[in-house]
Length: 136
Image (tube, rainbow, N blue to C red; front, side, top):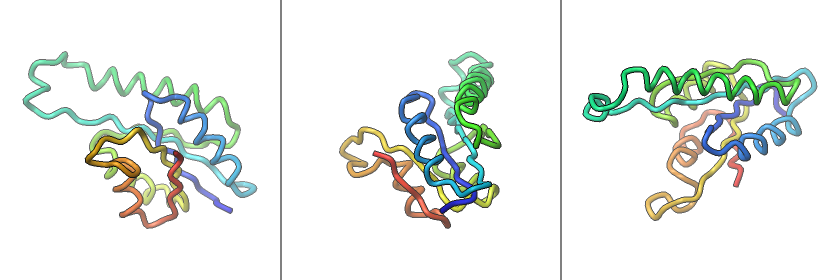
């Protein structure tokens, strides 16, 4: 099946993270590895002025704690990574950096503008150089 699976995690939906991790375990080759990723979105400058200085730092620390807890649920999880920026761009960059051969990404409840699978998942599917499994 797959040697290196990247599972981007939206920490606002932990049940989807657990489900994606289980799918990754089922699709993993013997000796393969799962990498967990969370992307903390940058704030536009006009918003950052009115928010606490350590907001992004706190979000990164919270993400690290939650990903470490998720990692404990599987013996197959290797690297845990937190990136900052646009989610789709950072997911694609992490997949290339890790040489992932599969990305398992959860979709979310769409609005009209991204009705089928969601903006981030849609961008990842269209631009990934490896296979992508969208978990509904």
